[in-house]
Each structure stands twice: as structure tokens, then as C-alpha cells.
Length: 124
Image (cartoon, rainbow, N blue to C red; front, side):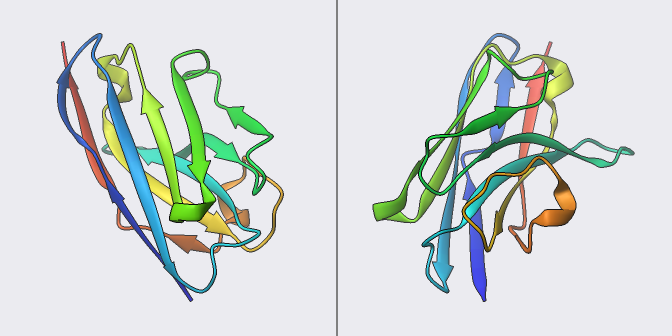
């Protein structure tokens, strides 16, 4: 079993930045690809970013490409999402997820473990 705990969400003005963190515990963090997803009110949970175990491959949704950066520190069992140039459309609950393989994935259904989420609100 893997436990994931997100932090770093909050209220920010449009154009601002936030950095989300996700700390994993329990079963070894080793060889796990990680991802960030988000869910706005009344909408489905959508892919945001993913990173492979080695940190060498990252993929982003078109809506965040060039503004968000996913990274990881395997020594700290932590994955990050740096969010810059935030816009009101980025408002959502952001979820961290892990999958028991080293390959990154953009598919929600390929992730076995999920955090509880952290709220990000961007005001105009």
C-alpha cells in the first residue's frame, strides 16, 4: 500500500505561482511513475502532468504546457508540481497519483494510488 499526501494548495491571484508537493509513504517509492490530475467542480478528473521514475520523461496536458513543471526527488519520496502564470481556469482540486511501474502515463486509469487532493483557487 502507498499513501500519498498533497500540500501546497491555496488561493492565488491570476498570474501568480504555487508549488504543490506530494509525499509518498508506505510501500517503497521506488520504480513508481507519478502523476498530477485535477478536478474542477462539476467536471471529470483530468490529466495534468506525469513523470517517470527516472525523472527523464515528463508529459503535460496542452492546457498547462509551458506553465507547469513536474519534478521529483526520489530520495525524499516526493513529487512536485510548479505552477506558474496561473489562470482562473486552473482552479480545481489537484490530486497526486502513483502507479506501480516506472513508465509515465497520461491515463487516469493506469494509476493505482491516489492522494486526498489539495484545493487550488485562482482569482481573477
